[in-house]
Image 1 (cartoon, rainbow, N blue to C red):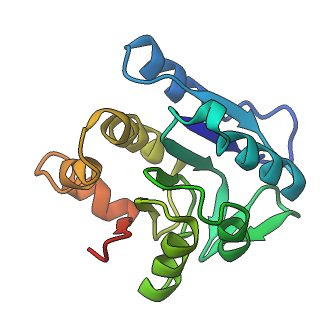
Image 2 (cartoon, helix red, strand yellow; image 1 turned 60 degrees about the vertical axis):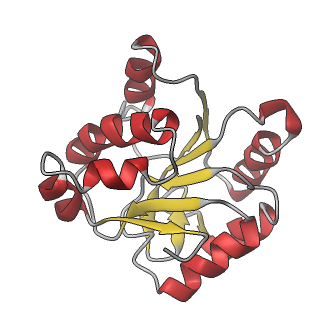
Length: 184
């Protein structure tokens, strides 16, 4: 898994991070990961270019741990980037990859916008949230869904898991959405 994480707060003493979730999954033998902090569009672009190089071809899941708004990623309170700009940076280089947006409301966009994103990037699937989410609830959810994305074997394994009776209520509460390149 490749993860880019934005600055959650303007307070530099804040210790909130997705890193403990990634470390837990790694210690359980579920994933291998790369984690990078990013606060500028230049850093994000740099890390995405690096991830999409042949050197990191085994890291098939991209995890965007950032604040968000519909169709927009927020790296900091002052630095944002539109999904279509991110798609242009990754144009045609995400074949066989899954993109997970652990960001409030980013997937509250039209089907057309999200299908265009998938078409541009060639990613197999993108998933994330359509609502403003609570950080602790999403961390619990991500522990399960990230494991499923990496180890499920099938592209829709995370969505099936979230629609199971055990996880449906939390999935619906967070507004989890999955969109597939094949139009499903």
